Length: 213
Length: 206
Image (cartoon, rainbow over all chains, first blue to last red; front, side, top):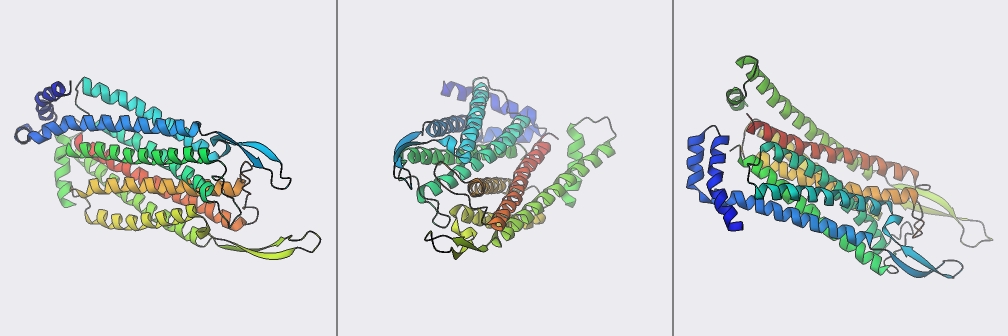
């Protein structure tokens, strides 16, 4: 399927490029002469799709890891020394609640854009600059939300891991090891998702930029 | 600058059929380009000023306080000097360092933008991408500092982390102000990315 699509695009792309540009002669000659540009046009869509699928997978993984991080342990009450069952879950911390909400938003956004990109690959039509503009602006907003979530969850998780002796916040990861493993993995995966989003925006910005040259 | 003002009007009227006369359409095109460019400069300056103010406010947030502490129940309380400063929390260190990075980048990009004003070369894309990275960096550091600040303000009863803002009022106020100002700086970087994208799009749709 991929090779069929590629050959189709090899035929289609020069025409699209030619009609969209005013300087058709020069541009199309340049276009035909460099076959690497033609293959790169379909490669961009494939790379974009795979980046979006990766983004969806990573945000979903981070979400599931964070939601399933609940752990119940027996801890001693400080003064009375009575063992009690206490649980640790993400909803105990506002930062982690924000993390879950932001991951849901990013996951939903990536799902919607996967459908859009799939549609564009299966039914080739030129990527209009307006579509790229919308993609970039939405992705920048999602990037802001997701990086803030990564930062806030990371800050709280670091205190949980190391504690802070200056204000007497004890570490909790020695008690709730499973919770901390889940939360830490979710944060690292969401950091990966942030990097993916930066790459996606760069890709869109570059294809927007390439059209004006 | 002169190059762009001679180029842009012809391109503008070439593709967009306007009800207005050619001259006014060309003038609108030039005005548009100028407005976009000056708002970009304004936003960049805002980002620089915001990160600078955030660094200063966070930097002078150190607070020393004498609090009575009961060591042995029957004896009078001992007076203990306690200090709060941003170096004590790794999240605040991250916040401070990323604001410094954003400030340095903001100044450099301001110079580069002023130097390349009106030219269309590869710098535009590079600056767009760097703005993006700076926005991401600032947003994550703001998130971290805000999360720790919220912990200090509210505490967390589930893991028995006590609030500290009832003792260190000035420190907390400084950190909160610093985070808000830095958030404005990161929003400025975000708007810069949107603005650069919109101007890329406008150049295309001439």
